[in-house]
Length: 127
Image (cartoon, rainbow, N blue to C red; front, side, top):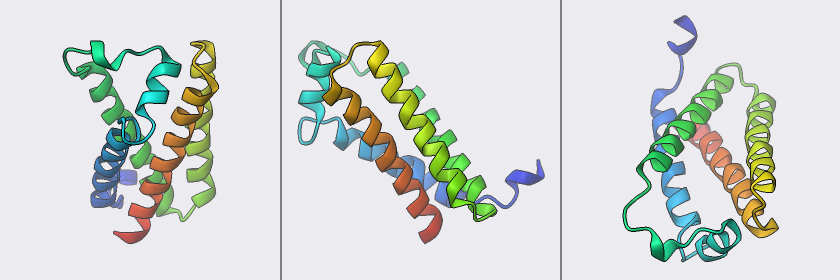
């Protein structure tokens, strides 16, 4: 497909990896992990193995969002990129509300999407 031929793939892949690492820190006890886990009713001490499906699907979602940001960078349409990021963040908040997460945990999820979206836009601009 011709639309993908001019995508800055380095920026897409770097944006994906940086965003995944941001998530690791974001949801760790060093930052927001304890409050997020409590508000999401997740017992971090009870997890005996890594949630592989959750991590793989997160990585795929981050790649797809980075690709969308990369495609909007081709047309220099930052507004579309920002709207896509906001749409994903609002979906995340909506899901959190339906799952009856605390407002704190829902906000952590929402602002994580905003943070990784900003990182992806920065990667497109810098690489």
